[in-house]
Image (cartoon, rainbow, N blue to C red; front, top):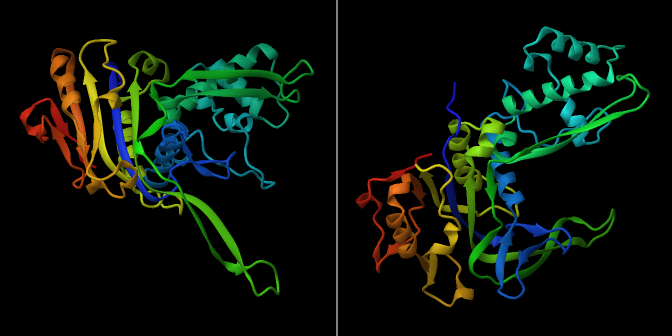
Length: 351
């Protein structure tokens, strides 16, 4: 059995994007999200979690087979519509998630064609769904969920639909991602491949907003106390790291192509409930050109001086620091090239 997460850890993840849109705002013509005052590019934690989920689903087999699933994924039903959350919840109603035979029988009765259960037995259905969710859906164990439940009056005695909900606070929480430098936004207009309408000689036009370049930083924390409730395992966390790195690298949609993971730190603490916090605030981008003119990873260096001072300050509370760095990213500390090999607590990740 996989070891459950029992210690606090923090994450720092940097990736960049070139000539693309890292996270469009659907309420503003799908433009990249930019702080108007600072010109800092903003990316939601929802976008980052989607990257991880898509990687799990497409590359690791979390597709509802072999006991591995993603809860938040698009599933079509027979009429061509998309499942809502209440219908999705019923996918996880499974007698095998229970051990008590009487409880199993209640689920079997509910699932039978003409079966009807008492209102008090709805709690057993909720228990079954919850057990199955945490056993199979890795995103529920990582990020938590709030799931509305509704059981039809046709299947529950009393003449009314019965509603309830399942809520788990996610052990893994990310702040909003922000670029480490001000960005410019470009408006691009081009022609499409097809005519504007049947018989027309003029092609359609496409319009889009992109960023020439953005280096985006995310800070995250993994809470061991919340992990107890979702049964988050160390294997799950290792897959999260893989999903952040390789998921970002494997995004192939037109608006996201060109994203490259550059740096990932995971600080593992030995002291319960301790963490440094706001790791992104201790790294600095030193541009080699005007900040708004940055167009590639070679146009700057990342200064880890303050970050390494923190690591030294809290050395007795840190168990290890897992890391992976892209070959093109230049890291410095104390005006020299960063060398992780001088500190035995730094352990290099490979994917």
